[in-house]
Structures are given as C-alpha cells and as structure tokens.
Length: 132
Image (cartoon, rainbow, N blue to C red; front, top):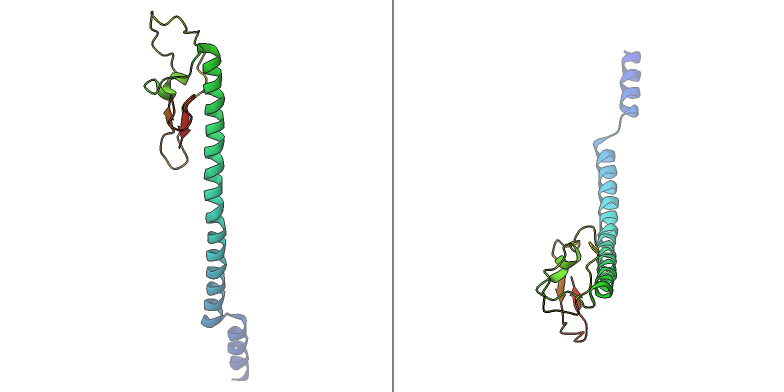
C-alpha cells in the first residue's frame, strides 16, 4: 500500500495542473496580441515605403519619356505610354523617338489600386500629377 501511494504522488507532481496550463496559455495570448499590435503599424509603414518607391520609379520613367519624346504622356495616353509606344500623329513635328519600355511592368499601389496620372496636372499645371 505504501508503494502505491508514493507512485501516485510521484505521478501527480510530475504533471502540470489545469490552472498552470491556463496561466501559460493566457500569458502566451497576451504576448501574441502585443506583438500583433506592434507589427500592424509596421505593415502600414511598409506600404507607404513601397508606394513612395513606386512613385519614384514612375517619376524617373516619366522624365526619361519626356527626354526622348520632348513631352510627357497625355492624360489619355496615361502611364501605359511608359510600356507601349503611343500612337504617333503625322502633324506633330515635336514628337521625338520612343525608346521604351521605360518600366518593366506597371506597378499597382500597395492597397490594390492603380496610380493616377494627369497631364497637365491640377496641382502641377506646368507638368503632371501622379497620385496613388
């Protein structure tokens, strides 16, 4: 009888109680929620950084287009003119030579929308506006 009691006592001391397991799970849940809240702000910062980088790439491509063609793409041509040569007009003697494509693919903003291009711009009336 004595040995049976000591085996049972040894088994009960080697296992975790339900309360101990619940405390550990609660602590892990709190740590996970704090981590998620910290990382959520980082993803928003990362999206803004990606948008700024995309816009800088498009600005460089638009400047290259302007140097080659002597003008910026019209609003109707849009940013597609950076991928495909715009239709030429025989009456336009100021047209240069399209040497594109100026971008390998058209980026979309990190929120899933398209970048908006207007020429002439409403803010930059002597140039273009580029927005996400």
